Image 1 (cartoon, helix red, strand yellow):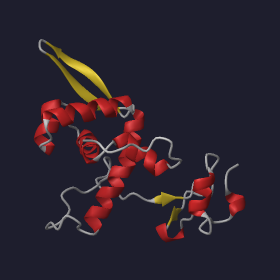
Image 2: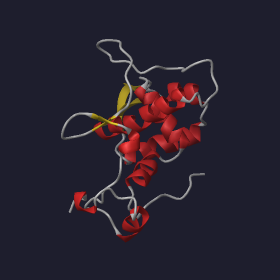
Image 3: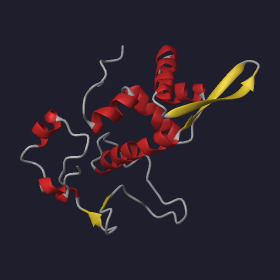
Amino acid sequence: MRSKGFEGMTCSVAGVMGALGDRWGMLIMRDLFLGLSRYDDFRRSSGITNATLSDRLKALEEQDLITRQRYQTRPERYEYLLTEKGRDVGLVLLSMMQVGSQWNLPGLAGPPLIMVDGNSGHKVKVALVDTETGQQVSPQDVRVALGPGADDLTRWRSAGRLINPELSES
C-alpha cells in the first residue's frame, strides 16, 4: 500500500519524492537509467510483484517521468522510456549511488557500479557548481536562499540558516 502523498507541501524534495512514489518507483527509475525498458525486465531486476509494478509504472507515467511506447501488437506489449523530466531525476539517483558507494552503505566488496564519462571512460562524480563561475562548490559551503515559491512554513523552516536573505529570489 502506498503512503500518503506530499500534495500541498511547499518543498522541492517532497515534490521529487512524491513523483517517484516509493522505493519501488525509485528502483524502476534506476532500471530505466541502466537501460531496461520492458515489464519483464523490471520484474526480474527487482522481484517486484505484478500488481505493484503495474501500479508504479502508471504512477510514474502520470507524473510524466516515463512514457509508454508499444513495441508489439499481438499480444500488445509496451516498453517504458524516460522523459526529459525523468532523465533529470537521474541526478537524485546518481547522487544516491555516489554516497552509497563512497560509504559502502550496502557493505559490499566494492561499488557494484562506477560512474564514468561515456566519451573518455574517466570516473565522474555528481558535484555542485556555481552557475555564474562554473567553479565547483564544496557541499559544506552550500547554504539556502529563499526562492519565489517560498511560503511561511518554508521561511520558518529555513530561518537562521539562510545565506544572505538579500540573495533570495523575489
